[in-house]
Length: 275
Image (cartoon, rainbow, N blue to C red; front, top):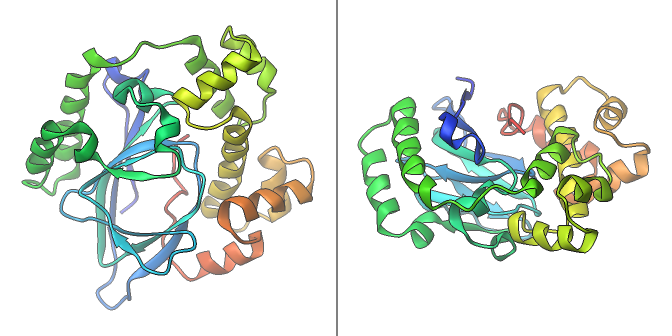
C-alpha cells in the first residue's frame, strides 16, 4: 500500500508540513529487508505504535530497536533501516523551525540524533502512546496525534521571518544565496547563522546542501530510469564533481553503489517524501 499523506489542521500548518501514514506489508517468505535512509532536510516525530523499527547508524555493525515514538533531530549522517514483515507508523514532518517552535529546544542539541520522545515530552506522551497502542488503524492514530499537537500549540514559540526564509530555501531545493535568505529573514549574516543553529540545528550552507542532495536522492528513488546526469541537473548541480562529493558525504558511497543497494531492496522510503 502506498504512503498516505494528510494535510494538517489549519491551526498547525505553520508548524507541521504533513502527516504520512506508512503501511508496508512484506511477503511472508521475504527475509528482513535493509534499506538506506540518508539525510533529508526534514525534522520529524515518528509514531511506530505496535511496530517499532530497527535502525543502524552509519559505521555501526548492529541494528537497534527504536522506541515507540522517536524524535528525529537535524539529520546529517546516513542510517540503515531494517523492516521485517511489516512497517506501520505515522510520521509527522515539520516545517523548517517547526520542531524548535513545538519543543523549545535548540535544534543544535538534537543534531544528528534520534531520541525516545517520552524522555522529552514526559507523561503526556506516554499516555498518548497507550492510546495509539489500542488501534492499528493509521487514520485513527493520525487523528489522536493531531489532537495532541493541537493541545501543545498554545505553548509553541512564535513564528519569525527566519522561518519564512527557510521555507523559501526548501522550495528552491537549497539553491539560494545565504545573503538573500538573511535579507528575507531581516537579519545580518551573523544573526542569520546564529538563528539557524537554534531553529534548524546546523549552519545554513550545510542545510542548503542537504536540501539539494535530498532532492537528487528522492528523484533516484522515485524515477530509477532517470540518468544520474539528468538527476544532477534537475536538482541544481552544475557539475558532476560536486554531485558525487555530496553523495559520498551523505550516503558514504558514490551514486553507482547506491544503485546497487536500492536494487537489493523493494522499499523506497523517500520516494514520496514531501519537502
